[in-house]
Structure formats: C-alpha cells, structure tokens
Amino acid sequence: MVSVLWLISDHPNIAQADIGRRLQMDRATTMAIINRLEARDLLVRGASMLDRRRQPLTLTKVGLEALSEARGCIEQHEQWLKSRFNKKEAALLIELLRRIHE
Image (cartoon, rainbow, N blue to C red; front, side, top):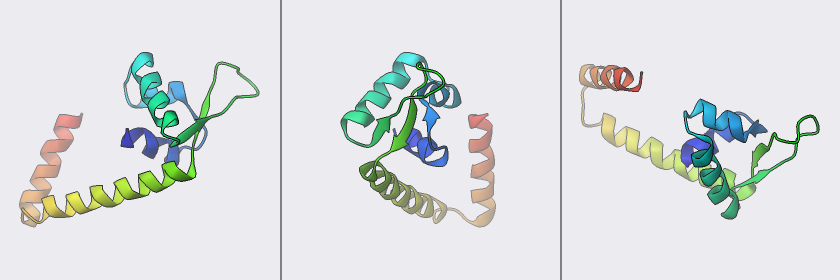
C-alpha cells in the first residue's frame, strides 16, 4: 500500500488505472487497495472533466503524514541493512536485487 501512496505523491492526480499498470496489478486488486486507502482517509478520488471513467487520485493530509512516516521507516531499515555490509558487499547486494527486480 505504501507503493501506491508513494506513486500518488510523485504523480498528483494519477488515475487509478495508471497505478495498476505501473505496479503491474490487475484492476480488481488495484481497486481493492484504493478502496482500503480511501476508507482510511489516506486518499480521495476525483472526477475527470474529460473522461468520466477516469478517477484521479490525491493524497489527503493523513495520507501525506502516513507516507512521510513510512518513508522514515524505510530509510531506517535501509540504513540498518547497509550497516551489515561493507561497501563492496552492499554494491553486490544492490546489483543482485536489481537483477531479481528486472
């Protein structure tokens, strides 16, 4: 769910369908996540003046605060993880994770 908040933050008014495509999720999964985030007052759906099917999404104040907290936790975890490796090992780990991601 944090990835959805992050994507909306980086792309204000992104459409729900675009989130699904970018995160490679099917429509049902995307809608379920958006519904849960909306129910928790983390985002709001808008209405497009050009296309009634398009639902641009915006983070609420609560959503921005939650994302900020999540980013802090992610940064702390990354620092903890990096502290377990020397620079060469960390670079290798990042390269191996990049391969998995691709």
